[in-house]
Image (cartoon, rainbow, N blue to C red; front, side, top):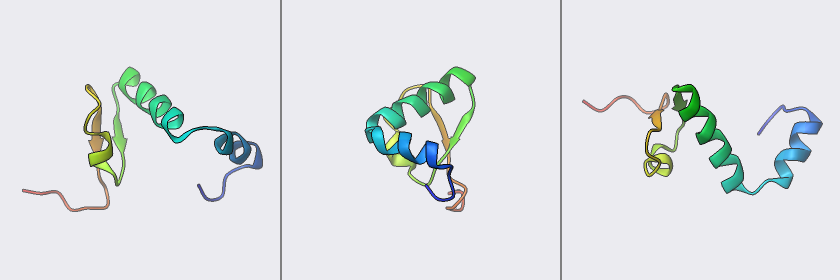
Length: 60
C-alpha cells in the first residue's frame, strides 16, 4: 500500500494476507456495503459479499 502512515505500514507488515482479507470481508458484510476490488474472482467464494470492479468495464 502506497502513501500510508508508518504505523499502518508496520501493522500491515505483521499481518498475514488472510488475516487482512478476512477482516475486510467481515466489515464489508457487516456494514452491508460493496467491496471495490480489481480481484473479483478472489472474493467470489465468500457468501454475502458483494464486489464491484471499477477498473474493468461492465460485461453486458
